[in-house]
Length: 418
Ligand code: DSN
Image 1: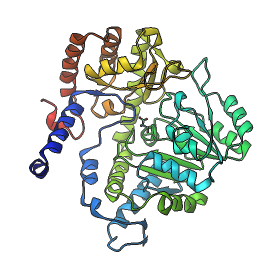
Image 2 (image 1 turned 90 degrees about the vertical axis):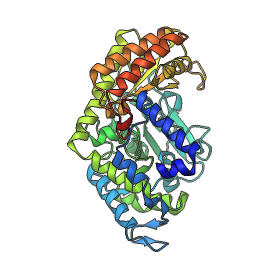
Image 3 (image 1 turned 30 degrees about the vertical axis):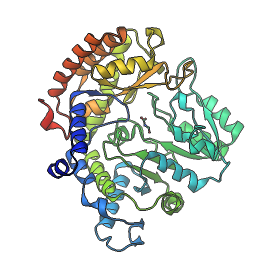
Image 4 (image 1 turned 90 degrees about the horizontal axis):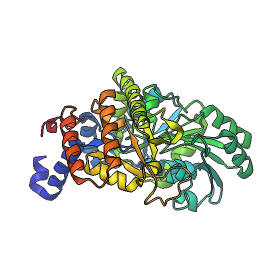
């Protein structure tokens, strides 16, 4: 980055510091990952210079000879990987993707039904502070209070009571596999479209480590940068009959020109995600999450739903006498980065909730396996037991950095021994 160093040393140095942070810490924010150098190169390519409102073969500006080819390739690869009938790769990220789906099928005031945010849903699934809850009549379903699992009879009853136009499945903080067939049945019983937001587990679906929602849903949205390990972006996949409505909603409905550098990088990530090594990666993400879950359960941690079937764990720390925020900050100081998170039926506020959420997509990208997960669980246990102990945090942070140096993260291999 010689040019950057010369032109803007402040930004240059901050990027170098962030590289070190990502190299030396155990990154367990469930929505984050490390992209390959190939994805990074495409993201930083000269396609960032090009405008291309419209779709392949029907653009509003000239000079699209190569843009059309990258967008066509990204779409073809997504269709093959996920078995989708129609794919739009232009949404800037997950929130605009979901908004485009609402614009395609709803009028202001229409009813949507999604998982409540404090129970693991996403802001854009109808939270009152999001446009999805302000412009539409948003109803929500909760998890079963006893098990922490999805309760399909409760969802069915809620759907029959509010008759949504769109039923939303998918989540940001739920560690089990949804029954997409059951969601389909409920949607059909009330005449709703079924939208599945698979942003968190798209990589697991791509790698065969999680059932696919594609055969059951009318529309599936996903970001491309979580377990799928691509650039910051999103895709919408849908049945052919909805193709025109979705495309019109993305452009010109809510967006202008697509970010072609991102589209190029999505295409690269989709190629990577169709390899056998990505299948192994997806399986290892889940194996790592299960190992971490059992390590923590053995140490008396209370995991919502009692465990995990995907990449993430949601831990209720109430029995440990520590809030999620205190634990998250202490763990960050010890080199283990995660986020504080509400747990279902939380009695605390979202900015200082009872739980933490963590995921294994990023650490698995750097090669952590079961042994490192057990070690990570032991460190988490030690910090949570004594969250004010600065010496302990520093001691563990040094051990974390040593461990990380043995597992070079994709794109940061040159820093692994610093
Ligand atoms: N912010 C993402 C997450 O952390 O789950 C969802 O958009």
